Image (tube, rainbow, N blue to C red; front, side, top):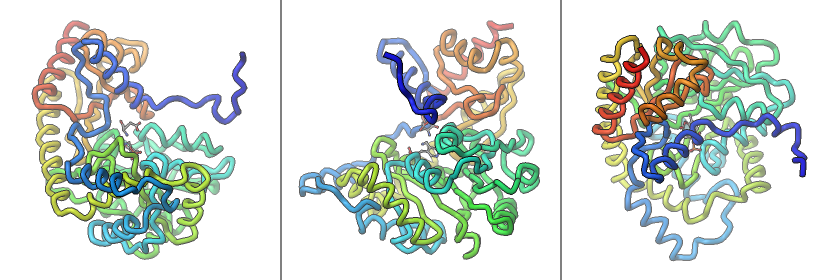
Length: 396
Ligand code: PMP
Ligand code: GLU
């Protein structure tokens, strides 16, 4: 039978990052020796004390519906976290919990966008922004950032793309896929400009825990009370505590009214995030061991970044910078991509020829580059980059 799809979903594409990591896992399960640099998830297990807290909640019968915006203890603990770790003063009633940062973003676009509204999306961008925006009739306006600036964003990059339909700017630092971190000066200039023009900011800070070389993460909403009033601060437990599969994200809203709408959207869609899982998240915020775990992960990622970047630098005709955050590198592979029809074919070649999975730059709106995550052991990083080097040698 012919599918009777709504116009809205007809051009919807699956998440390429999820698709590539699924493909790598499938090949591995079949016994193929694949090295996956595609996945955007930490390779650490969730700490035991977090799991134990969820198990305890489950045993205690925390198995029923919970308040749609999140259990009150978690909203309170998140308001406290925003205060102490981000320097933002949110009331618990301004914080909403939903099924991962991905669903938070989905609800934000649903809440904010009317047909034809323009959203500024700095490119390279994380794959789901543009697809979600289009689902709700919005127009994603790509704002290219520059390789020579390490893909950070400046006010000058943004200005040419602002129109009277511009409603929201997305900020994502530390950045997926480039690992870029923004300076306080640039962030302030951009935020002040948005304030002047009445543009809202969605600040996706999912990778806040992972900054390197002494770089500190700065939350957009912490810059001033006025900026806080135009900013949604999006975050999740997924990356920080290695809890990707738990599906718990949260947002700090400019005021209670927005938070109420998001809560209503939860109540009419997912009802609430899995009740006992929220107790695990609460433990992540309360247990002092959690910070030690995060720091251990951060140091491990920093070391792996150095290793991966130094190995990539040894490959002739590859340009790569040293990102200051997240757990990705985004090298310029144009000299090799040019041997193929496009960068998707190029990454297919690497998967078939070198048995290494990476994500093509075009998935992030930036053709000719590719994203490699370093959520892998040192041995895998060495082996994987060597394989890529070998596959390049066989091309010439
Ligand atoms: N924002 C960015 C920049 C991401 O990389 C991701 C993917 N993890 C998300 C949001 C979604 O996170 P979550 O897994 O919490 O839905
Ligand atoms: N955000 C991660 C990534 O970019 C997970 C995949 C996804 O959610 O699309 O790889």
